[in-house]
Length: 111
Length: 114
Image 1 (cartoon, rainbow over the protein chains, first blue to last red):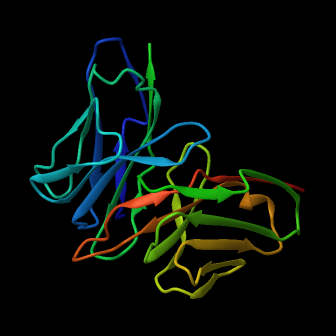
Image 2 (image 1 turned 135 degrees about the vertical axis):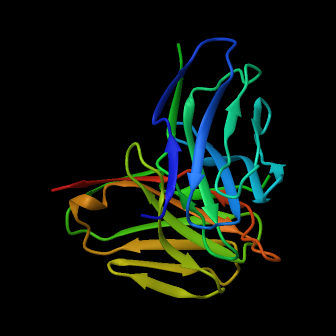
């Protein structure tokens, strides 16, 4: 089935560690996005990419990094510089002027 | 950045009641979207609005794109228990060949009592 796959579903990070969240889509969408969701808040944009090998910072990019080497994949690295990484992370993709569609998220917690 | 104010923050209703929620923005959008999120899952698109004044229905859901382009509302008629979840509005300005960035409201938590 076509869709957006995020893995893992749950992830634990030790202090000072970098962790990478995976996002893969087989929808042939050009654009991909990463959002962070905290309890009681809306989604905040971390990074987005409209084309392979290009990406832009969103509203809260500090402490995060991304790459877009393939159209299907847009991994997010939460670096040790991100001081409050505990959150629910959502990946989305879209094509042209169509709305964004979301994966089922990765919940990151600090040990 | 742009701000979206979504209200109410939460609603507790009886099954069968109608529900109304809205979003207002300090800036103009040319697209409004409404999503629903179940616990531990990603948001699912309910309705997309592309034109000021547009009124669109999807089953028991009806949404409107405000004339000023700075607001939108979502109505749910005859609520049922599976309507429980968090509802988000999102505004966007599609340009060029890309859909562009979305700005999300804080969400409305809906609880339906049987």
